[in-house]
Image 1 (cartoon, rainbow, N blue to C red):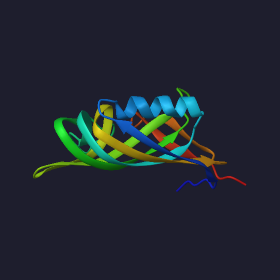
Image 2: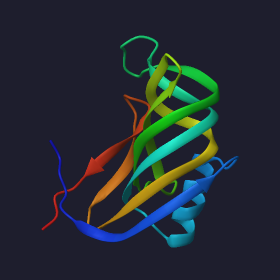
Image 3: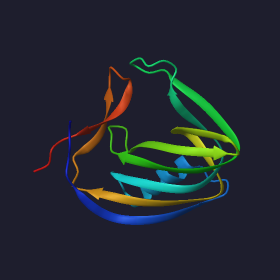
Image 4: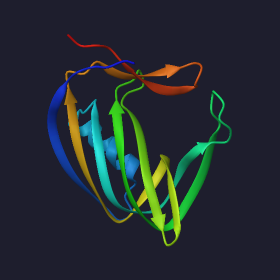
Length: 148
């Protein structure tokens, strides 16, 4: 197990509006506010998007099982964001529901807001946390260093 201790920095409340891309809007906000490490919680609805709902088979490296969704889905979820060699890397997980259907997974590539998404961002300070490319998993995974 790895760990790093830090503290809370700034806290932001965002309202994303119909038609905005949740991922793109979040990335833009992080750049504008120069946020490197944080956690985001969100609730609202998405019109359409793409999610990984697990691997095709439980092997390493995983081959993601993608599901496209459209038509207006209620959602709640969370994201963690940490710096990497390529800039801040997002990891967003969400539960999505529409009628009797439900999806849970990692939102990737796009998620178009339907009506609104409310998001609270909790910035972290003092962490030694990054996302590093893992050759075996072929993914950017969280790497932590113990802080003094």
